[in-house]
Image 1 (cartoon, rainbow, N blue to C red):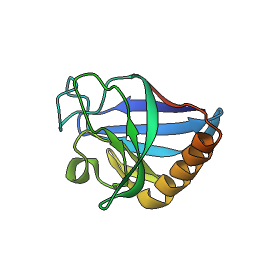
Image 2 (image 1 turned 30 degrees about the vertical axis):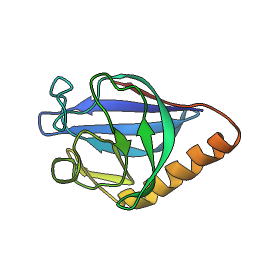
Image 3 (image 1 turned 180 degrees about the vertical axis):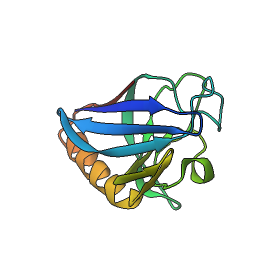
Image 4 (image 1 turned 90 degrees about the vertical axis):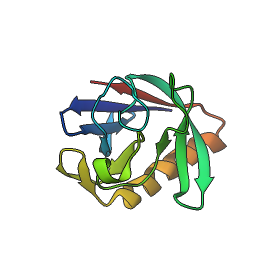
Length: 131
């Protein structure tokens, strides 16, 4: 299963739109592009394999594999990129500003459900990030 993330870059943050099977799924917020610097930049555009992950803090969520010069890049809930993200990606139901959104947990749960269904079918889930 391929998930497409179309990004728009701003100085204050990055907003994106998620598509699954060419159908709009929701939005994403991220930090601004700052040359892939750890903890302060969104990840580079590219194709990443997603895997299931669980933590006490975020519950069920996703992790990107093989991000160049980065580790622990997650897809987890957040509604304000500058305050809550350190290089990760947060799905949001609605955008409320640059790098800001609403109802992140709701959309993350839907995304995780879709991905886990694909994992159960032994499908590779890829996140394709582009502008």
